[in-house]
Length: 107
Length: 120
Image (cartoon, rainbow over all chains, first blue to last red; front, top):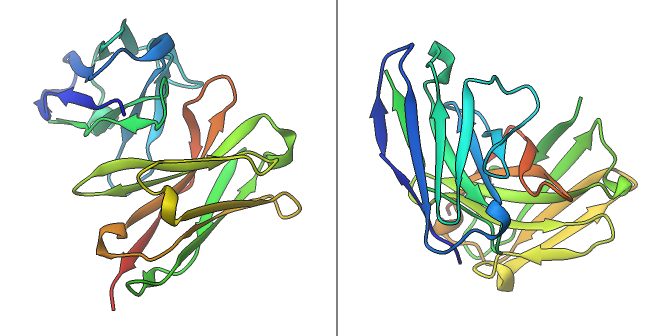
C-alpha cells in the first residue's frame, strides 16, 4: 500500500500568512490521484482539492494544490481565522486508498 | 443537498459484531454515479479507509479488514451498511460514511461520524 507522509506535523502561523503543507508518497501516485481535506475539531473532513490541483466545489481560491509523482503540496495563500485546522492528504491512485497522518495549522 | 447520516450502537462488546448503517438523502444510491464508502478515524492510526460498495452490490475491501468485513446496500431504503465481525479494542474509532465519485475518486460528502467503543 502507498504510505503518505505529511510534514510538518504542526505549522504555527498567523492570520494573513502563507501556509505550505507537504505530502510525500512512498511510491508514485498514479495519475496524480491525490486529494486534500480540512478537518475541524469534532467535524468530518471536508474535501478541498482533488487530482492534486483541482479545487472542489465552493472552495476559496486561496487554497491551491500542486505536485506530481510522489511529492505534493497544499498552499493556503493568506490564512483566514477559519483555516486553522488539521489537513490530510489522501491518495486514490492505488488500492487501498490511504491517508497521511495530518498537519495541524495553528495560530 | 446531499446528506449522509450514520446510525448504530455506540458500544460493542469484544468478539461481537459492529453494525452501522448510513442513510443517504439528496442523492440516489441507485443512480450509479458514485461509490459509497466507510472510513474510520482513531487518534493513534488516523484516517483509515475501510471499503466501498456500489449500488449493484460490488464491493472492495481494505485487505487489512477483509476477513472480518461485510458491506451491503439497500437501494429501496437508500442506505448502505457495514458489519465488522470479531471486534477488539483496536476497532474503537469514529466511523464515517462518505460518497466517492466514479471519476473523481475522492470523498466529496461525509456523514458527521459516529463514535464506536469496543469494551466489555
